[in-house]
Image 1 (tube, rainbow, N blue to C red):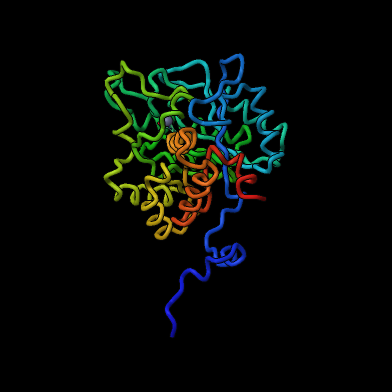
Image 2 (image 1 turned 60 degrees about the horizontal axis):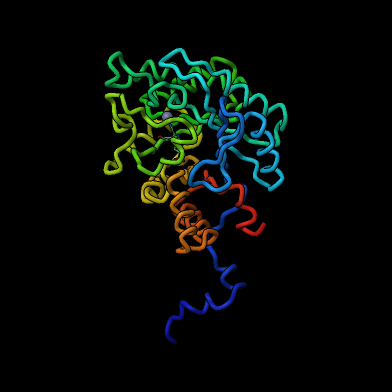
Length: 325
Ligand code: PBG
Ligand code: ZN
């Protein structure tokens, strides 16, 4: 027996292609979209090249362009102008869903984020108690279920709760079923950690917790990155409550969790390459310290290797170009 050569399989592009285990089909990519009620014109999102806070008019044009470039799956974030503390009005986001459905029919698959942080005066993901020290879990769940039902009725294919309240998936499933929306899927942000990688998103979605709130951050509802056991409990619970797709977020910092949960739970898994992760790649490239296309593909490969069935990425719309198909 000669010496084992691991290099022989790496010696030519055809052989490397044949030996490759991990693929990234472009139809596994989901593009996030922001649509804002207020601004007169679309605004770029800091740190995320090619991503904008769209107006209702530019949203339709952007989706049209994305469909032409071969990306047909979206995660929509609606950002209404009027912020409230309760009794939320879903009309703006529901109207955008209806407009997308009207224009593109079934050509676009549209998931919509279900949360309250873009709707509240204080920027938290739930309704707060009277002195703003805690979220009121059950009042928040009721509001989330109403939002999900309204979005489903407006034409969303999938609702994606990102709030992290206890019991929201069961309440949303019940509200959907009770309103004749049995076919609407739920993608649960099941393993969503209290991460510092959400910075550009919070600017895009008006969702940073306000400074004057005693409840300073989202640590009382999002998972502590040092408590991976909670990610497993949360994902098992959301699956039991009827989530069709489970998500791990952020992506690269949590690939160990994605690996473990996807091996353990027989549901499709999404991974969210968050705004801060994306911006970090773009900053690296802008400084001349990395090739953006290569680091982008390397991170997607790592996510697929860790068990992601689908990838939510701000660079999805560059996916077909990047992947050469
Ligand atoms: C809000 C929400 C966040 C993201 C998705 N939905 C931010 C947060 O929880 O503060 C993060 C997305 C990103 O950073 O790209 N519920
Ligand atoms: Zn939120």
